[in-house]
Amino acid sequence: MTNRRDFLAVSAGLVLTPFLPGAAFAAGGATQVVGVYRRSVGDITVTALLDGFLKIDPKVLTGYDAATADKLLREAFLAAGPIDTSVNAYVVQTGGKTVLVDGGAATAFGPTLGKLGAALGAAGVKPEEVDEIFCTHLHPDHIGAFTTAEGAAAFPKAQLHVHEADAAFWGNDANFAKAGEMAQNFAKAAQRALAAYKDRTILVKDGATVAPGATVAHLPGHTPGHSGLMVASGDASMLLWADIVHVGPVQFQNPSWTIPFDVDQPLAAKTRAKTLDMAASDRLEVAGAHIDFPSFGYVAKAGAGYRFTPSRWDHQL
Ligand SMILES: [Zn+2]
Picture 1 (spheres, rainbow, N blue to C red):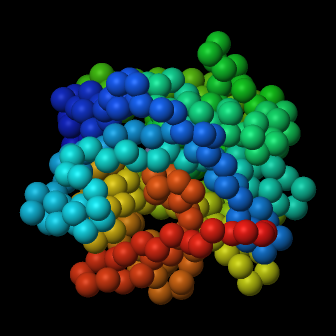
Picture 2 (cartoon, helix red, strand yellow; picture 1 turned 90 degrees about the horizontal axis):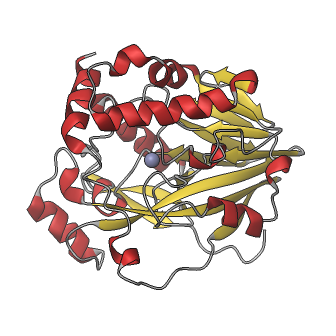
Protein backbone atom coordinates (compact mmCIF):
# COMPACT_ATOMS: atom_id res chain seq x y z
CA MET A 1 0.00 0.00 0.00
CA THR A 2 2.93 2.33 0.62
CA ASN A 3 3.63 2.33 -3.07
CA ARG A 4 0.09 3.21 -3.96
CA ARG A 5 0.24 6.08 -1.52
CA ASP A 6 3.41 7.23 -3.26
CA PHE A 7 1.58 7.38 -6.58
CA LEU A 8 -1.33 9.26 -5.10
CA ALA A 9 0.96 11.72 -3.31
CA VAL A 10 3.15 12.16 -6.35
CA SER A 11 0.10 12.70 -8.52
CA ALA A 12 -0.93 15.67 -6.38
CA GLY A 13 2.00 17.68 -7.68
CA LEU A 14 2.25 16.23 -11.16
CA VAL A 15 -0.70 17.49 -13.15
CA LEU A 16 0.58 16.01 -16.36
CA THR A 17 4.02 17.60 -16.27
CA PRO A 18 5.51 14.61 -18.11
CA PHE A 19 2.97 15.05 -20.87
CA LEU A 20 3.41 18.20 -22.85
CA PRO A 21 1.02 17.51 -25.67
CA GLY A 22 0.85 19.64 -28.71
CA ALA A 23 3.90 21.87 -28.35
CA ALA A 24 5.29 21.20 -31.82
CA PHE A 25 1.88 20.44 -33.26
CA ALA A 26 0.37 23.72 -32.11
CA ALA A 27 3.34 25.59 -33.57
CA GLY A 28 2.07 24.66 -37.03
CA GLY A 29 3.92 21.41 -37.75
CA ALA A 30 2.56 19.38 -40.65
CA THR A 31 0.27 16.50 -39.73
CA GLN A 32 1.42 12.91 -40.29
CA VAL A 33 -0.80 10.58 -42.34
CA VAL A 34 -2.97 7.98 -40.62
CA GLY A 35 -0.90 5.20 -39.01
CA VAL A 36 -1.99 1.62 -39.76
CA TYR A 37 0.29 -1.40 -40.11
CA ARG A 38 -0.47 -5.14 -40.28
CA ARG A 39 1.50 -8.17 -39.18
CA SER A 40 0.56 -11.79 -39.08
CA VAL A 41 1.10 -14.16 -36.16
CA GLY A 42 0.36 -17.56 -37.72
CA ASP A 43 -3.27 -17.35 -38.80
CA ILE A 44 -3.91 -14.26 -36.66
CA THR A 45 -3.66 -10.72 -38.02
CA VAL A 46 -2.44 -8.00 -35.65
CA THR A 47 -2.92 -4.44 -36.89
CA ALA A 48 -1.19 -1.57 -35.13
CA LEU A 49 -3.20 1.66 -35.04
CA LEU A 50 -1.54 4.97 -34.19
CA ASP A 51 -3.60 7.21 -31.92
CA GLY A 52 -0.95 9.94 -31.92
CA PHE A 53 1.81 10.96 -29.56
CA LEU A 54 2.65 12.38 -26.17
CA LYS A 55 5.81 14.24 -25.25
CA ILE A 56 7.54 12.57 -22.33
CA ASP A 57 10.64 14.08 -20.78
CA PRO A 58 13.02 11.31 -19.66
CA LYS A 59 13.83 13.54 -16.67
CA VAL A 60 10.55 12.53 -15.01
CA LEU A 61 11.67 8.91 -14.71
CA THR A 62 12.60 7.73 -11.23
CA GLY A 63 16.24 6.65 -11.39
CA TYR A 64 17.06 9.04 -14.26
CA ASP A 65 20.55 10.42 -14.45
CA ALA A 66 21.40 13.07 -17.00
CA ALA A 67 24.80 11.81 -18.11
CA THR A 68 23.48 8.31 -18.87
CA ALA A 69 20.33 9.59 -20.57
CA ASP A 70 22.08 12.20 -22.70
CA LYS A 71 24.62 9.63 -23.91
CA LEU A 72 21.85 7.20 -24.91
CA LEU A 73 19.83 9.92 -26.62
CA ARG A 74 22.90 11.06 -28.54
CA GLU A 75 23.60 7.47 -29.62
CA ALA A 76 19.97 7.26 -30.82
CA PHE A 77 20.37 10.53 -32.76
CA LEU A 78 17.82 12.22 -30.52
CA ALA A 79 18.06 15.64 -28.92
CA ALA A 80 18.03 15.87 -25.13
CA GLY A 81 14.62 16.83 -23.76
CA PRO A 82 11.05 15.61 -24.24
CA ILE A 83 10.61 12.73 -26.68
CA ASP A 84 7.62 12.32 -28.99
CA THR A 85 6.17 9.04 -27.72
CA SER A 86 3.69 6.96 -29.71
CA VAL A 87 0.34 5.96 -28.30
CA ASN A 88 -0.62 2.74 -30.07
CA ALA A 89 -3.71 0.55 -30.06
CA TYR A 90 -4.27 -2.69 -31.98
CA VAL A 91 -6.85 -4.80 -33.71
CA VAL A 92 -6.38 -8.55 -33.41
CA GLN A 93 -8.37 -10.64 -35.89
CA THR A 94 -8.53 -14.25 -34.78
CA GLY A 95 -10.92 -17.16 -35.19
CA GLY A 96 -13.61 -14.97 -36.77
CA LYS A 97 -13.43 -12.44 -33.90
CA THR A 98 -12.32 -8.83 -34.10
CA VAL A 99 -10.60 -7.69 -30.89
CA LEU A 100 -9.72 -4.04 -30.23
CA VAL A 101 -6.79 -3.73 -27.83
CA ASP A 102 -6.95 -0.35 -26.07
CA GLY A 103 -8.63 2.85 -27.17
CA GLY A 104 -6.10 5.68 -27.37
CA ALA A 105 -6.57 9.00 -25.57
CA ALA A 106 -9.38 10.67 -27.57
CA THR A 107 -9.34 14.27 -26.27
CA ALA A 108 -7.76 13.59 -22.86
CA PHE A 109 -4.28 14.91 -23.69
CA GLY A 110 -4.76 17.45 -26.46
CA PRO A 111 -4.63 17.59 -30.24
CA THR A 112 -1.66 15.29 -30.90
CA LEU A 113 -3.84 12.31 -30.02
CA GLY A 114 -7.29 10.97 -30.81
CA LYS A 115 -6.59 9.58 -34.29
CA LEU A 116 -7.65 6.02 -33.47
CA GLY A 117 -11.04 6.34 -35.16
CA ALA A 118 -9.40 7.43 -38.41
CA ALA A 119 -6.88 4.59 -38.14
CA LEU A 120 -9.61 2.03 -37.53
CA GLY A 121 -11.49 3.35 -40.55
CA ALA A 122 -8.35 3.10 -42.70
CA ALA A 123 -7.93 -0.49 -41.47
CA GLY A 124 -11.47 -1.21 -42.70
CA VAL A 125 -12.92 -1.95 -39.26
CA LYS A 126 -16.34 -0.48 -38.44
CA PRO A 127 -17.17 0.11 -34.74
CA GLU A 128 -20.06 -2.39 -34.89
CA GLU A 129 -17.67 -5.07 -36.17
CA VAL A 130 -15.62 -5.06 -32.97
CA ASP A 131 -16.65 -8.16 -30.96
CA GLU A 132 -14.30 -7.82 -28.00
CA ILE A 133 -12.34 -4.98 -26.44
CA PHE A 134 -9.29 -5.88 -24.39
CA CYS A 135 -8.30 -3.02 -22.10
CA THR A 136 -4.69 -3.42 -20.95
CA HIS A 137 -5.32 -0.97 -18.09
CA LEU A 138 -7.70 1.86 -17.35
CA HIS A 139 -5.37 4.85 -17.89
CA PRO A 140 -6.83 7.69 -20.01
CA ASP A 141 -4.44 7.14 -22.95
CA HIS A 142 -5.80 3.60 -23.33
CA ILE A 143 -9.56 4.07 -23.04
CA GLY A 144 -10.38 7.32 -24.87
CA ALA A 145 -12.19 5.87 -27.88
CA PHE A 146 -14.25 3.37 -25.86
CA THR A 147 -16.94 6.01 -25.25
CA THR A 148 -18.66 8.71 -27.27
CA ALA A 149 -18.57 12.37 -26.20
CA GLU A 150 -21.89 11.68 -24.44
CA GLY A 151 -20.42 8.75 -22.50
CA ALA A 152 -22.12 5.93 -24.43
CA ALA A 153 -20.33 2.80 -25.65
CA ALA A 154 -18.68 3.68 -28.98
CA PHE A 155 -18.46 -0.01 -29.90
CA PRO A 156 -22.10 -1.05 -29.70
CA LYS A 157 -21.65 -4.83 -29.80
CA ALA A 158 -18.33 -5.25 -28.00
CA GLN A 159 -17.71 -6.87 -24.64
CA LEU A 160 -15.09 -5.12 -22.50
CA HIS A 161 -12.42 -7.39 -21.02
CA VAL A 162 -10.42 -5.79 -18.21
CA HIS A 163 -8.39 -7.26 -15.36
CA GLU A 164 -10.43 -7.47 -12.16
CA ALA A 165 -7.70 -5.70 -10.15
CA ASP A 166 -7.82 -2.65 -12.44
CA ALA A 167 -11.59 -2.40 -12.34
CA ALA A 168 -11.49 -2.72 -8.54
CA PHE A 169 -8.73 -0.12 -8.08
CA TRP A 170 -9.98 2.60 -10.44
CA GLY A 171 -13.62 1.89 -9.70
CA ASN A 172 -13.33 2.57 -5.96
CA ASP A 173 -13.54 6.28 -5.06
CA ALA A 174 -12.16 5.53 -1.59
CA ASN A 175 -8.75 4.91 -3.20
CA PHE A 176 -8.69 8.51 -4.43
CA ALA A 177 -10.23 10.39 -1.52
CA LYS A 178 -6.87 11.97 -0.62
CA ALA A 179 -5.36 11.86 -4.11
CA GLY A 180 -4.33 14.77 -6.29
CA GLU A 181 -6.45 16.15 -9.09
CA MET A 182 -4.68 14.11 -11.75
CA ALA A 183 -5.30 10.76 -10.08
CA GLN A 184 -8.92 11.73 -9.43
CA ASN A 185 -9.35 12.61 -13.10
CA PHE A 186 -7.78 9.30 -14.09
CA ALA A 187 -10.30 7.50 -11.85
CA LYS A 188 -13.21 9.47 -13.31
CA ALA A 189 -12.16 8.56 -16.85
CA ALA A 190 -11.83 4.90 -15.89
CA GLN A 191 -15.25 4.87 -14.24
CA ARG A 192 -16.79 6.50 -17.30
CA ALA A 193 -15.48 3.67 -19.52
CA LEU A 194 -16.61 0.99 -17.08
CA ALA A 195 -20.07 2.56 -16.81
CA ALA A 196 -20.55 2.60 -20.59
CA TYR A 197 -19.93 -1.16 -20.78
CA LYS A 198 -21.36 -2.14 -17.41
CA ASP A 199 -23.70 -4.80 -18.81
CA ARG A 200 -21.01 -6.43 -20.91
CA THR A 201 -17.81 -6.10 -18.92
CA ILE A 202 -15.85 -9.29 -18.40
CA LEU A 203 -13.46 -9.13 -15.44
CA VAL A 204 -10.44 -11.26 -16.30
CA LYS A 205 -7.45 -12.80 -14.56
CA ASP A 206 -4.07 -13.97 -15.77
CA GLY A 207 -4.47 -16.67 -18.42
CA ALA A 208 -8.06 -15.83 -19.38
CA THR A 209 -8.98 -16.26 -23.05
CA VAL A 210 -10.24 -13.10 -24.76
CA ALA A 211 -10.62 -14.70 -28.20
CA PRO A 212 -9.15 -17.84 -29.85
CA GLY A 213 -5.36 -17.69 -29.39
CA ALA A 214 -5.47 -14.43 -27.42
CA THR A 215 -4.89 -14.75 -23.66
CA VAL A 216 -4.38 -12.33 -20.79
CA ALA A 217 -0.85 -11.93 -19.35
CA HIS A 218 -1.05 -10.09 -16.01
CA LEU A 219 1.91 -7.67 -15.80
CA PRO A 220 1.17 -5.75 -12.58
CA GLY A 221 2.82 -2.60 -11.27
CA HIS A 222 2.08 0.16 -13.76
CA THR A 223 -1.47 -0.36 -12.52
CA PRO A 224 -2.72 -3.19 -10.30
CA GLY A 225 -4.38 -5.02 -13.19
CA HIS A 226 -2.05 -3.91 -16.00
CA SER A 227 -2.00 -6.78 -18.50
CA GLY A 228 -0.63 -7.69 -21.87
CA LEU A 229 -2.24 -9.88 -24.50
CA MET A 230 -0.37 -12.99 -25.62
CA VAL A 231 -1.30 -13.87 -29.18
CA ALA A 232 -0.41 -17.35 -30.42
CA SER A 233 -1.13 -19.39 -33.53
CA GLY A 234 0.75 -22.54 -34.51
CA ASP A 235 4.45 -21.95 -33.78
CA ALA A 236 4.10 -18.16 -33.86
CA SER A 237 3.44 -15.91 -30.90
CA MET A 238 3.60 -12.25 -29.95
CA LEU A 239 3.16 -10.36 -26.69
CA LEU A 240 1.30 -7.07 -26.83
CA TRP A 241 2.88 -5.79 -23.61
CA ALA A 242 1.07 -2.46 -23.22
CA ASP A 243 3.03 -0.12 -20.87
CA ILE A 244 6.06 -2.24 -19.96
CA VAL A 245 8.26 0.48 -21.50
CA HIS A 246 7.33 4.18 -21.78
CA VAL A 247 10.56 5.85 -22.89
CA GLY A 248 12.33 3.25 -25.02
CA PRO A 249 15.43 5.27 -25.95
CA VAL A 250 16.55 5.32 -22.30
CA GLN A 251 14.50 2.62 -20.54
CA PHE A 252 15.63 -0.47 -22.48
CA GLN A 253 19.17 0.17 -21.26
CA ASN A 254 17.91 1.17 -17.80
CA PRO A 255 14.90 -1.01 -17.03
CA SER A 256 14.92 0.07 -13.36
CA TRP A 257 13.94 3.62 -14.39
CA THR A 258 10.22 4.04 -13.82
CA ILE A 259 7.55 6.54 -14.73
CA PRO A 260 5.64 8.36 -11.94
CA PHE A 261 2.37 7.09 -13.41
CA ASP A 262 3.21 3.62 -12.13
CA VAL A 263 0.81 2.95 -9.28
CA ASP A 264 3.49 0.71 -7.74
CA GLN A 265 6.91 1.72 -9.08
CA PRO A 266 9.01 -1.09 -7.53
CA LEU A 267 6.58 -3.72 -8.79
CA ALA A 268 6.47 -2.07 -12.25
CA ALA A 269 10.28 -2.20 -12.42
CA LYS A 270 10.28 -5.84 -11.31
CA THR A 271 7.64 -6.75 -13.90
CA ARG A 272 9.57 -4.88 -16.60
CA ALA A 273 12.79 -6.74 -15.72
CA LYS A 274 10.98 -10.08 -15.81
CA THR A 275 9.16 -9.32 -19.07
CA LEU A 276 12.28 -8.06 -20.86
CA ASP A 277 14.21 -11.13 -19.69
CA MET A 278 11.45 -13.44 -20.91
CA ALA A 279 11.16 -11.68 -24.28
CA ALA A 280 14.94 -11.83 -24.77
CA SER A 281 15.31 -15.47 -23.66
CA ASP A 282 12.36 -16.67 -25.76
CA ARG A 283 13.20 -14.43 -28.76
CA LEU A 284 9.55 -13.41 -28.50
CA GLU A 285 8.21 -10.70 -30.78
CA VAL A 286 6.59 -7.90 -28.79
CA ALA A 287 4.47 -4.84 -29.46
CA GLY A 288 4.32 -1.90 -27.05
CA ALA A 289 1.70 0.78 -26.58
CA HIS A 290 4.45 3.42 -26.27
CA ILE A 291 7.12 1.95 -28.55
CA ASP A 292 7.63 3.96 -31.76
CA PHE A 293 4.83 3.11 -34.19
CA PRO A 294 4.31 0.48 -35.59
CA SER A 295 5.84 -0.81 -32.35
CA PHE A 296 6.72 -4.41 -33.30
CA GLY A 297 10.15 -5.75 -32.45
CA TYR A 298 12.49 -7.89 -30.44
CA VAL A 299 14.45 -7.43 -27.25
CA ALA A 300 18.01 -8.65 -26.70
CA LYS A 301 20.35 -8.41 -23.75
CA ALA A 302 22.91 -5.61 -24.18
CA GLY A 303 25.39 -4.84 -21.41
CA ALA A 304 23.58 -4.33 -18.13
CA GLY A 305 20.27 -3.73 -19.93
CA TYR A 306 18.58 -4.49 -23.23
CA ARG A 307 18.30 -3.19 -26.75
CA PHE A 308 15.21 -3.11 -28.95
CA THR A 309 15.34 -4.10 -32.62
CA PRO A 310 12.23 -3.19 -34.66
CA SER A 311 10.73 -6.01 -36.71
CA ARG A 312 11.43 -5.77 -40.41
CA TRP A 313 8.76 -4.28 -42.64
CA ASP A 314 6.36 -7.00 -43.74
CA HIS A 315 5.79 -6.79 -47.47
CA GLN A 316 3.27 -9.59 -47.35
CA LEU A 317 1.33 -11.20 -44.57
ZN1 LIG B 1 0.04 4.29 -21.46
